[in-house]
Length: 376
Ligand code: F6P
Image 1 (cartoon, helix red, strand yellow):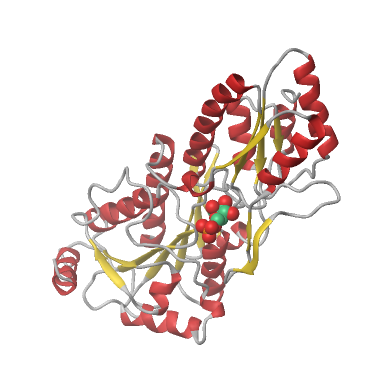
Image 2 (spheres, protein in one colour):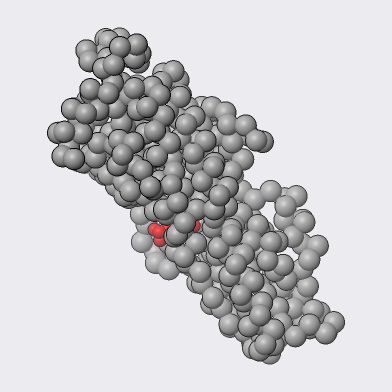
């Protein structure tokens, strides 16, 4: 269906009697009685984004009678006003698909010439009542700043890194952990056959959640995380002790942001993205040569990279993403702006966007202590 036809169809659906308008702008009522909800997916993609989009559209259109406007490629699509009109029909069959049908980018409106003004103009041009931003600390950081400028936003927390404050879990994390755990299981058998030390480097940026969860689940003999700078001599003595006890192989899981004591993060490049982030990576290869040199054991490194972000979401992430999407469209309908939907225990709650951004949620000490019991 063409964009124009989509718009007509959406408006027709929304104009059914009994539909409630959430208002156009802070004071004036919408003329057509249809609330227009925008949605974007920003930052690094992760499994579950399509499940959020589907849930927002399904409940937004079928239950609340809204029109849903998808912005392509994160904040870039808002700045450039590139939209796709979303319907239950064109968002059907995407629940199990990885990536995002809307595309994503790491565009930061606050770093673009006239970026914020262009965001405001494009939301006004599409008559957007509320924009749902699905993202991590960067995307939601922009959402929080725009909220303080008077725009209507709702946040949905996503990232494989699980490093977002104010929510117990982000969707995407569980899938990434499962992918890493499967990789560790596979590494085990080949490590054992060749009497090797195998090092697995996983993502997570400055937080060790993926490394700790997958390391515990996969039975790693050492887990190195950014929150605990490591002593390479200690890592090697764990491995030696294990081999002295008769084990012929070891598995070391290292987070990309892990740092040796008195060392620095391993970077792929010094270049920074629009949010000031460097690209991490390479600590696994450094460990491979250090462990080999210090212990004499044959050692190999594997870097999982973007495999951790690709493919189909786990059932847990599909359900979490769906619950987040439903909660976000309900918050938009109730005009409860400036909030992020979050998981607390087993409940979905709303928290101020400001609580989610600013500081990172780093790895739980208690969890790392569980992992340590199995080292060496
Ligand atoms: O934030 C998600 C993440 O996958 C991090 O774990 C990783 O450091 C980064 O994104 C990689 O970013 P890019 O896809 O830009 O290489």
